[in-house]
Image (cartoon, rainbow, N blue to C red; front, top):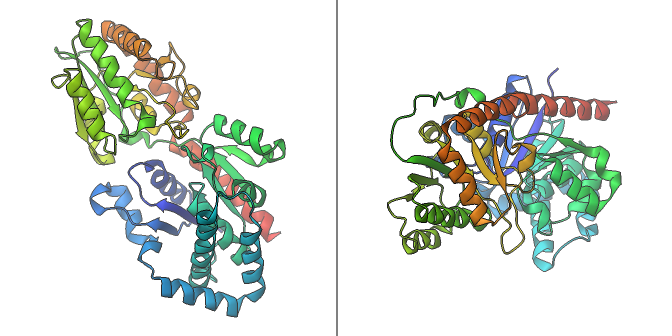
Length: 413
């Protein structure tokens, strides 16, 4: 009988967490039944075709009133008083909190979990899996306690480095932890203890390769070399370093055009930097695009660049999925030798890695690839094979499928 796993995320589907939707679709193709809960509803216009199907069946907590959540808590207390008090004690026992606001969040997620318990109890859910360490995993931990089933969560992105709420408690109570990079696992184990190492499973943020077919660039059309970057316009993506590197390329007389796809709070600053460096004819901020709209950008580019760095608050990317998308499209990549990126990109094989925030080295790497179409073709071909071998969503979904079934079997026994 197929296992039934409740997925909880912060915004589902999400333009910036596209692999979560892919993961769900692939698991469902393996026979897993996956109801979905999201803390926030995404704007409809940001969704691609696969994401829209998930959105149509997702329960959105931001549309549930405080009164409904309170009534759900009262109902849970009446029906399952022992589990209600046990779970509340779990929440009140958490010590790794940052202050009163964190305490308020913990209590709020407890009431949300009670509402979900009242709504979902008896529906046959055997396991809960959460994406993002903050609210979704707090909510999932409480709901698992109320339902008496195991839960797990995936570590990705920057939250693990910025005092994540109750991470020690979540590590203790989770049946397993999925990490999109080995770097994240090593970091958490070094900080919270080697005893948690056995709970970790590396689960890559995989691609649906049919969406990103191989692109033949052997007959390139004339014109400037086309550099592409994709990512939110936030400090940790390092777009300001890429723009400054483009300024150096222009000073050196290199013929290029650079397109940056994404939106975010750094847009005014980046636009100002482009104007300051006289790059308006060279560098374009394209704006946001859905997953359905991205493949043509990869197809029309000659190389891909992403200059990830640590932002002023200490946030860092883990392993950006856009690098996988670019490599699947046979693009050589220039990226930062940083966090989990070397687990995907081997420098001199699939592209070139440079130190974070090293603008001259970034410009040198871009110039080297621009000057050598042959090197771009060779690296692009190897990069696609690397994604096929280790970053296909079918591989990551199978790993999760096995873990979910093991967790469900251990509970039933």
